Length: 500
Length: 56
Image (cartoon, rainbow over all chains, first blue to last red; front, side):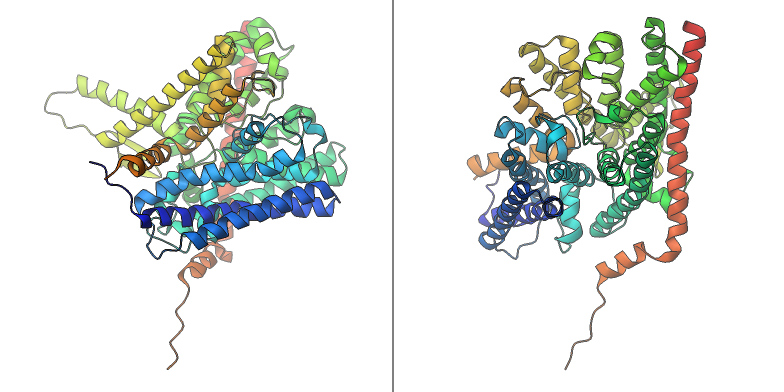
């Protein structure tokens, strides 16, 4: 029998969801300031209205949902998933008010894409949007990379028992420090240090490439935000291809690779345990699958002769395999080149690395190296057990921050989540095929949305069917929150209706 | 009677994160992570050279 949530349960959820929406609203101060500095009055009005609406929503939620009851584990998961819905609905306002989206669904698509660090977009005439809207796109993806709940935990929540559940509900279930609020602040510390470093280097490279200081400064900031968050947004429609520079590509690749690392691993390495970077199951898994994918792809493309020499081959393969594997989604080829030049085999290799994705508790999406590593290690363990004498006692060990034993629940959880990701990728491909796209394109784009990557072979376009836009919005949300908190929200809704 | 002020645990924790003695470790950590990314890129370069030499 399911227990109907009490009025207090609803109040707790409403109160903390309001806090997260307030946090998202406060983020709009940055694009508002940008609009004021650059005298973009229309954009300033759009952002002022949207910010006020978010603050009104947050205040109303606090006022209506006044309660002294602390947040529990169950509330935390529901707050995490419902916050993402409200943040998307309200965060889409400036997009829609700008007049650069065909419909509110398109605005929702771009907002969800930004928050989930996917990078697919339906915005029209990207090269002529306001500086403020470009700032908002990149702030969304940067904040989404750390997690909007992390923002609320950092500034708004005053340490509650369910705070860890909200944090875990956002797909980051590893603590860097014993206190979850300190963990949130440590995540910001890592992100801000990289922001200072990456912004400086990218801006300097931009100036060296001949950009004006102002353009280089903003491009550097936005490209950093898009790369570190493994989001894949870029300020121009040509994406990373616009820069035509090997140096820019190398710097960008270092930034998005660092962004794809587990925050717990960052913290271990930053606090003196530097050997963790070569011992951790996630980095080992990533290095292995990256090398295999690169070998296969360079072989395929060299045989077809798409690129004239080894350097061109290297530039295109390393960038896209790494961009796909880290679920960043930056591209240095045109979307259609995946279909016309790389062919189905090349697209399949990229789709595979997108499926796997990067690290757990990072800004990245996909199944995650940790789960792939645990499953492969479980397979090896089963083989060893089959060959070992009957009396032998074998334990499956793996190294993640510390040496751990892969118990049956750990392996089962890894398998279960992997299975859910694979099912989602297949459903995404099926929806694409039913909408009239060929299987390879539908699979590629569906995996890209579900793994929060953002590489596109041309399916994502303002003219795509609305049903596919909505499906991709849901897949991006599911992929980012790793299913559990979404299922918790659905379960909660069911108990509200049918519980006793 | 005035109540003795209680130190704010959150502020203390945050101050510890930003303590000057930590920054040397943070810089070394960043260097290690850059080296990891550079190693992946070097592997890709080796793959491209091998593919070019063998398959073309």
